[in-house]
Image (cartoon, rainbow, N blue to C red; front, side, top):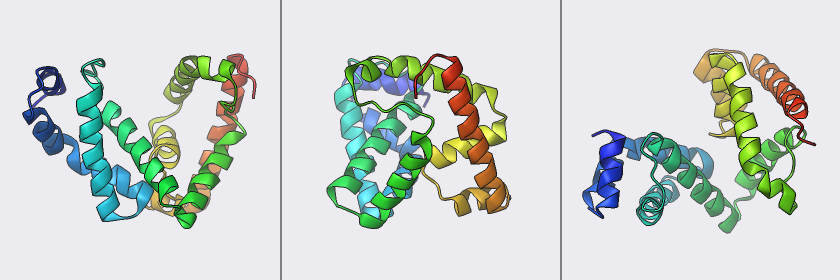
Length: 186
């Protein structure tokens, strides 16, 4: 079933919307959550919580053209919250490591002005990603969206770990330059 039809089912408050969502995206959402929480049961809980959150938030939102991205964002936030709530020191350290890597090229949202500019920053980030080659974009997203390890990325793309690290380093530098050109203060 296509995304538009699934969203229609959510608008009709038809419970088969959840079944169709689970059938189409369940495995991908569970894998996304598992990559963050590293626990199958918690990943399944995050997947189920995603369906509940989607049920509660789709009527005001209408993600017809980007349903998976909408669901993945929910899953990612729920998974990160599980990590925080359960004080997973090892995983939290890993998330802090990823945050540290990007903090040099993204402004911190510690004041109201940064929050207001969130949409503009998101657009600038999308613009930056569109300038990268498909491989570099995929490596960047695997690291900073899906939170894959360097070793996992290297294996996925048949690259050495040093090549992945170098690519990520150069992408972060390009991102910093792009954001500075766009007028974002770092």
